[in-house]
Length: 190
Length: 190
DNA sequence: AGAATGGTGGACCGGGCGGTCAATAACTTT
DNA sequence: AAAGTTATTGACCGCCCGGTCCACCATTCT
Image 1 (tube, protein in one colour):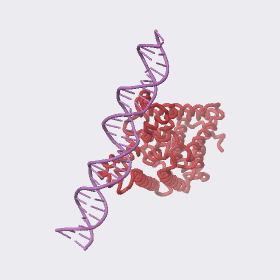
Image 2 (tube, helix red, strand yellow):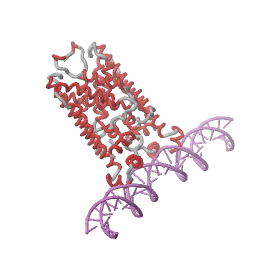
Image 3 (cartoon, helix red, strand yellow):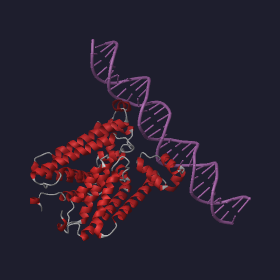
Image 4 (cartoon, protein in one colour):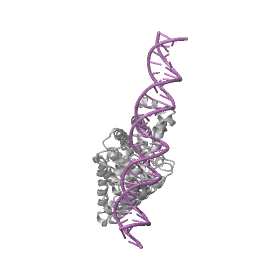
């Protein structure tokens, strides 16, 4: 049921989703929704929270594994994100959409959660790069945390560009270029 | 007057801006607005168009100059974007905000303009990198267009992360890391 | 001066908005 | 089975939305 609400917000945005929409989509009466969540905004926050937690968790799962394949896992994950962000069937990322819409004048309830989630993703990127570093896929002198932050920017850029209609090949190319720019260990330099 | 409308949409978003808001902010009567633009949506499109054109133009101006300083100009521009995207006083980028809010189900009127603008920015990045390439700041084997696309992703990522509340130092760090990853000409490798 | 013209303002419209509430259904407890 | 308790409903509220429309006024033309 929370999933139905999430999909509605996801597809139409916050302001463009009416409580009637949410009634239709959940099958619940209006009073039930208000009784359970108190508010449209609080309901959105609840959904948003869930989405953020799930997102970070899915990144963790995707990057989990032995040191040897760490860099390749990261590569696959980012390429997957590029593919998912592109195409007319995309619906993009609720985190990005929600943050873009509800980040004005001092109300930090949405941005706080978004920021925490993004930092969580960055953390997992960094851990993955540290694994790659241990395995020797990344140059000894490199700082995995800085690289992770940079890849996070690329990652969010993919989403933004995909939403604007950029095609899949272009997005995947950006990922490849970014990864080629990573400082590889001298022994392995191509 | 168009500027006042733009600021309103820019600060509050599309759906959250009412025609009454636009009346107050422009000082014009409702009939005048409808007479001149026909529609809230058309009015937004007009503003959006203007914003896109101005954005691309300002990138062009910022990156204009001799081959010798090309890479440094690009660096300064991206660092400036990082600073502008951060901080609580930010209001971010209307192109990003508008695209995020109005990019659903087949209506391509917004995304078409956004895509064109982003490709324009990418084009200027690419030209700037070509200048740097001619001057020898970028490795001979590198493809300026691919690098430009990658930096475009970083660029849009900055905006998205800034909107989520990421601090200026972090964003500037991402720019630096991305630029350090560019393939420099062997003679100049640090 | 007087008439024609067209841009302007704001009252007005139906509808849909977020939110409330009393009636009612469903379930628990004894 | 009956009483008590909680959850659910959808009619209802006042408000504000995007959009229409016409009286009005400033300008221009004769």
